[in-house]
Length: 380
Image (tube, rainbow, N blue to C red; front, side, top):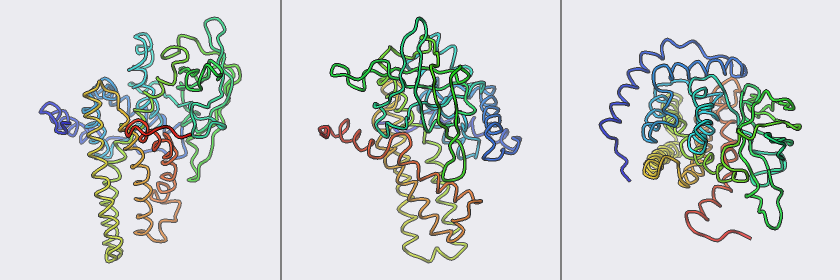
């Protein structure tokens, strides 16, 4: 794999750096972490700024390498992240761009890029656990609509979303229909009749997740992405983006955080602890390796047509644990200050605990690596 950048790609990087240096000092202050309507407005305004400057297309119309450069440079510069619309820009958007019809791409992609519409993800369910294919939310055909009933959980930003990428069961499981084959991918309008959203408060005290209850909600058949009962394959496209390139900015952030921790340790005297120094050094090597793996995955995606492969599961598995180890080390550096909930460090530490569960648990990722990369047999 060629991990080097072309002259054109480096020109793109230089132009982006110049633009960020001009624009970022002019941005307004960020709203409170708990003000989700305010955060939606802030995040979508930033997306519109990107769109107007010609950077909106980078999430799916650009090459994987250009997208990598964009995510790397915006994180290094401290630019706003995709925030409330991460599902639309990093998951649903690339999926629709890859699997949607021309009409669907025209309807949904431009509003995402302009920051006009926000998406959430309706995949997980209370009774399915980590086995996503065990979902029970039902959808049956009634003329030109699907009628959907069921519930979803851990639906990020559902309370401020306009659309939801929704997985439903359109054919019951039977001896002839395995659970993976009766699933369909729908675009659900969040203002449809029969939808109830109930926010969930996390360990860190925030409420970016919600339960979503669906009571005979009508969704047009035209909102189906892919064929009926082919939703599992479409979902694998979504998850390949979720596990492949969606964490790029966070790897850059973790590498920057390591530098901050080293400086803090020198300032408070904990740098004299050789065990702590070795821990910081090992984590530095870990995140450097993860960055190279990210480049490899992007290079592979570019070679094979733009969709990340199963290498994303290798990355997601190791990154989830490395991030938790990073914040364990931060607690050693900060001492009692690491328990202060008013500090961003503490909130990030609590948030990091979810990474071995979100976007596919570590156990699921190990199964994917074992079966699809190593060729080991399925467990019984």
